Amino acid sequence: MTNLNLELSDRLQAWLTAAAAAKQLPLEVFIVKTLEEISVEPQRVMSLEEAMTRTLSEKRELYERLAR
Image (tube, rainbow, N blue to C red):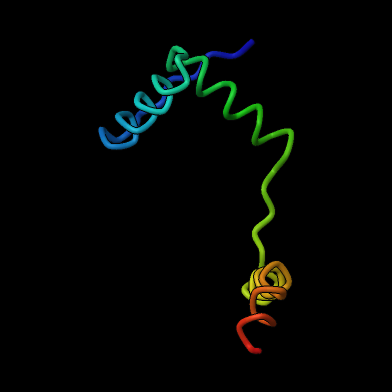
C-alpha cells in the first residue's frame, strides 16, 4: 500500500470534507472510494451532437405531442 501526501486548496478540501460528511465517511475513506469508482468505470464525455441526439430521443414523444 502507498501513502500519498496531497496539497489541496482550501476550497477543494472543504468540498471533499462536506461530500464525505454527507456520505457519513471519514475523508480518507471517501477519497479512496471515489478514486476506486473512477478507476473501475471511467466516465465518457459525450460530444455535443451525442448529447443533443440523446436528449431529443428521450423527449421525442413530448415534442410530438406539443407539435399537434
